[in-house]
Amino acid sequence: MNHALVSELFEGIDALPIIDIHTHVEWKTGTAANIGEILSYHYYTELANSADFQEGKFPFDDPEELTRVVLPKLELIRNTVQYDWLMTISIEYLGLDRYEWYPENWKYIFDRSVEIMGRPEWRDELLAQSDIVRVFLTNQYSDDLEGLDTTLYAPCLRTEPFILWMDRPDERENLGAFLGRSIRTTEDFVSAIDKTFEKFTAHGMGYAAMSIPAGFETFAVGDQDAQRLLDRMVAGSALSEGDRRAWGAYAMSRICD
Image (cartoon, rainbow, N blue to C red; front, side):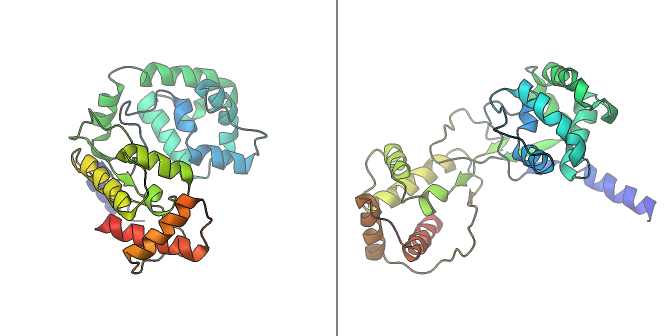
């Protein structure tokens, strides 16, 4: 290995500011408040569960208890990049070395994280130390964006409710509440999309996104055909797989419009 070249490349990359292109952070708080909130991320709970199955649910509503439960399992995922991320956080931000991560020390680790991460100035310190200059959020159409710091955050719209979930009565009801009238026609549907994009662009929208299911495709679907599909949804009739594909293609086209 050419260590000089590796060092040169690392130093060049490390000097670059960070633009986080996809995050699930809650912008009103900005950061986790303790190590339990970090361990609650599915990367850690799923990996820990795959290594040592957890009977019953993890105590997600209690970060301290979650730390006590998950921390002993971390020994089993030391060969993962997620564990390396955690150790980097521990060393660089919490001042805790790797050797301090053992099961009996879980309470000290948790308390130390609260001491560091619970301070009002923690977010700004973290941004400065990490050189994070821009954060692209993950948002639903109904999320409250008032007060969003658009110099740092860019809201990004999840489009699944429009494209994949319109056959769910609660989704149509929620979208109708957002629009101010029930979703009964394709015109109502397009109006809801327009209102959403007006809201997001007014707050410096980054992009629209979707977790695309396998087999998803786009093709031309006319307004009349889309209205027939919407009528079936409103009537409570189940959609066939072909109907779902057709609605998805129609909705994707309207989003792109």
